[in-house]
Amino acid sequence: MNGVESGPIDRALAAAFPGRSVERLTGVGPSWNGANETVGVVFDDGSRAYLKIALADESHRLARERAVLRYLRAHGPVPVPEVLAADPDGDPAYLATAPAPGRELLGAYEAADDAERERLLRRVGSALAALHADRFAGHGEIVGAGRETGSAATGAEADGVAPDEGEAPTGLSVEFASWTDVLLATVERTREIGTSDRLADHYDAVVDCVRANRDLLDGAPAALLHGDVAKPNLFVDGDAVAAIDWELSHVGDPARDLVRAEDQLLNGFDSTGPERFAAALRAGYRERAGGLPAGFERRRPVYEVVRMLGRSGFVDQWTTYLDGPLDALVERADTELRARLDAV
Image 1 (spheres, rainbow, N blue to C red):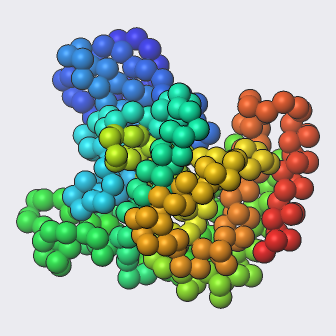
Image 2: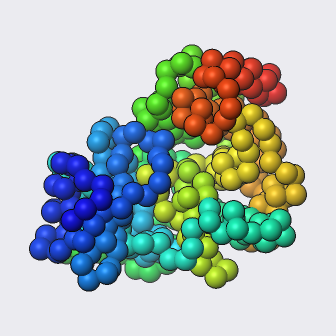
């Protein structure tokens, strides 16, 4: 076996695939989440898998991801990879999955012309709308598998029938709370995995903004959200769009997921992508859902403030992709956050 190796990876590999012969491990590209390590696994028979381990997991990330993957495979509404093995309480905690169906959106997007990019973004918008059609009784944190199912779920469990003895539930365990409190918990998760404390005061500024808008936020719809809609996490399979990396998923306002998707798919550190691409993403969403999420424009400024933590908490990582010293990026991020706060 050759490739990427580490003690925790080796232990998780032996636990997840006992007796299977591994030809090599492969890298999966850069990650800004220092709490995880993920590798591709190529077995001697040519089959493949992906193995994610948690180097630190105080917020149920792998239990959440395993539960959501099983939920979506059982009930829809978007394609996801199969869970092959998992132990969220192991040493280390791990999750092994099959490859996602289709081609990674990142490669397809980079190879496409502008017209094809618009078509791809329409498909992403449609997939998000399909996901957000799965509505829940309230907002909440997903902490593992359980009995909760959304409005789009089908089958016996969705009708309140318990699984047979020894059969793992395919519903979700949701700790219900106000949307404001759930959103604040996502801010704390970002603080937990952030790689820079140069702008640590930004977290507190964002928390204050969210709390000040509690009355606006708490009336939002409650839908299953992905929480990290970035090109490397999406795969194009014909007209369908599959998604991986559900560890940040939660039950929240679909407007928040759409704002984040537009930002991660199209925007830069302090620049905005072409409006025609954002319009294509929203058009795909409207075509599937009949409109944008209720309250989208009113709550959007708050979510754009929250999105700044994707810059502030990882400003050191951004230096890899942008010209200029770190101090200049810190200043630019600080200026941008103040502008977004003023717009709320």
